[in-house]
Structure formats: C-alpha cells, structure tokens
Length: 393
Ligand code: FE
Ligand code: FE
Image (cartoon, rainbow, N blue to C red; front, side, top):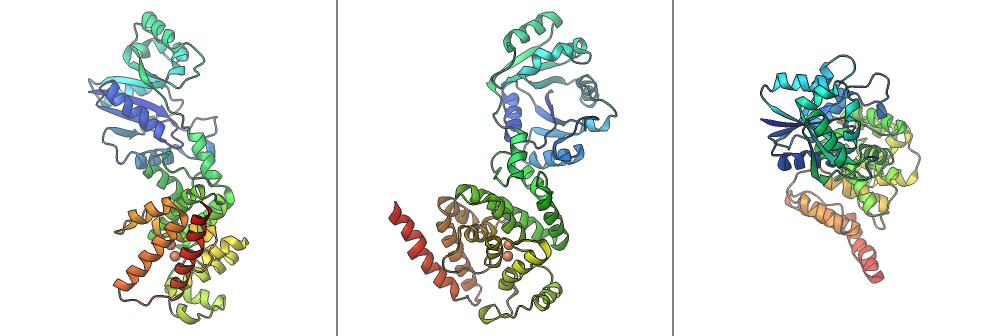
C-alpha cells in the first residue's frame, strides 16, 4: 500500500489541503493520504486556542465525504515534542509493509537536513514537495542534492500548492466575512456550530443561544449565519450586522412555556393576524429578547429579527438577507430549496420573491391561512424593488 501523509495544524483544514492530497493521490499513484493533526506545541500559542482534539474533530467533519483522504490523530497520542521521524515509526507499525510518502511544502526541502534524525528519515520515506511559488531556495537543486547526499527519494509535484491559508479563513470568520467554498462544507459547519474564530462578544451570545435553543434550532441558526454571511458578501451589506441578526433571528423560538413568559414580560399583545400564531410572533418577541437579554441596540438588526417572520413593504437589505438566509441556509433540505438558493444568488430581490412564493404555495397546499400583508409586500417588491432595479440598468 502506498500511503501519503501531510502534517499540519489544520486550524482549520481548507480546500488547499484537500487539493494537495487529491493531487498526490493521482500524481504519485497513492492508495490513501492521511492528514495528521499536529499536537499542541508546548510553548507556541495556537491561534484562537483551538485545541488539537477540536482541530481533529473539525478535520474529520471536513473529510467525511472523502473516500481516500483520512484524518489522523496519531501525533496526539504521543507525549512531548513531535518529530516526523517518530510519526514515521508509528505509521510503519500501523501499516506494516506500506510505502510512505511525506508530503511537504517545497520550501521545507531546503531545511530537511536540519530535521531530527534527517539521514534516517530520508532513507525511510519518500518526500513529495509542493511548490507554492516564491520559495526562498532553489527547490529543484535542493531535491537533487538530498537525493545525491542521502540516497533519498525526493519527488516534486508538477502542480503548485494553493493560495489559500488557514489564517485568511480565521480572519474572515472573525470579521464576519463569508468563507463559503474556502473549506470543506463539514469543516465550515463545525467551526460555526462551535463558535470558533469569533470575536469574544459574539461568542458569548452564541453560547448563550446554544443553551437556550434545542439542538435542531441551534443547527438551523448557525446555518442561517453562514447563509447570511454569503448573502451579505454578494449584496454588499454589513457582515457584522448580518451575522448578529441571523444569530438571534430565532432567539425567541423556544418552548411554549418560555414563550408565554416572554409574552407577559414584554407586554406584547398579539394583534390581528399574529394573534395566537407563535410562528409569526417569535420575530417580534425575538427582537425584544435580543435587546433585553442579548444586549443588542442596533435598530437595523432588531428590525431584521422582528420582521424575519413577516414580509413588509420596503424591506431593508438587512431584512431581506435575514429573511432569505433563514429559508435557504445550508442545512435545509426541503424539496425546492435548491431553486430558492439559485434565485437568491441571481439577485437578492429575486431571492426574496422566490421565498415569498414558496411560502404562499406551501401554506395554500397545507390549507393554512395566509397573512394578507405578504401579498402587499410581494406587489411592492415587484413594482418598486425589482422594476426600479431593472430601470437602472
Ligand atoms: Fe424564525
Ligand atoms: Fe429560522
């Protein structure tokens, strides 16, 4: 069996890592590639203090769909400083008779003679180097000299490594920018559901919310945050506001008992259509809860939370984003959701219209009453927002 392995912090794993692993699989006819999570270095701080076991779990989630790329925690079981030499010994024990290929960034080839027990290491495994461009040394001659000096087997990939970096992903998540498409879906979902790389004040709200909601609602909420980040990026909205509105949009969607308490506490007397309809009321009450219990004061954010259950005439971009993100978030799987997602990518107003129409159709099919204000909002959207936009072009 020919096994490649690639070590790293994977904080988080990104599509570049996967691209390298896939390239190595085909270019060097490997049977599988292991992505090995580096243990917490004793004196070095890991960004955002994401523990090795958490990074391993995130990696496993990211690789769930991969047939021949596996996550490995082999270095986490060892005490003390982690050397590639020791990892190789462990891998030979785990895979007797295997042929091992250590995958590294090509710049590391220049430094290889300084590695722990370099001569033995270079004899016991082949090395595969991926160039990233701008290497500080001549990679080709480094490979040749290693081969000559140590009778090593150093191979260079024809492909170059990716432009992506984990640092960029962490910074984007922190700054409420979308990371969609930069890392595997499972890893993205994991990092949001576990509140990684968030600013402290957002993380506090997210943890409080997690304690208040049931698991299903919480998963939906974090999916809504991801969708809102993507929509905010596409339509030039403020990412931080979109994140906050999405995070708290269902903060009042709790048990009937708690909802009854909220109704008393906030003296909300349901009027008209919303009377007795918790499905609609949790928006208005959610805005109150967000203000009182989560310390949100931004009126735009509170409005987006309040109105995510009802459509009104002249919705703001933030209201539209929250409304659409709630319907198309990535963990939704109802029949027709793909069309709604496609419309939302075509245009924000188109997305709102598609979600409205889906909602109307769905309620009609179920024989449920429809809030008349949605028809007014729909007319307004078509004649003002969509027509005006067309007129501008
Ligand atoms: Fe809701
Ligand atoms: Fe929701």
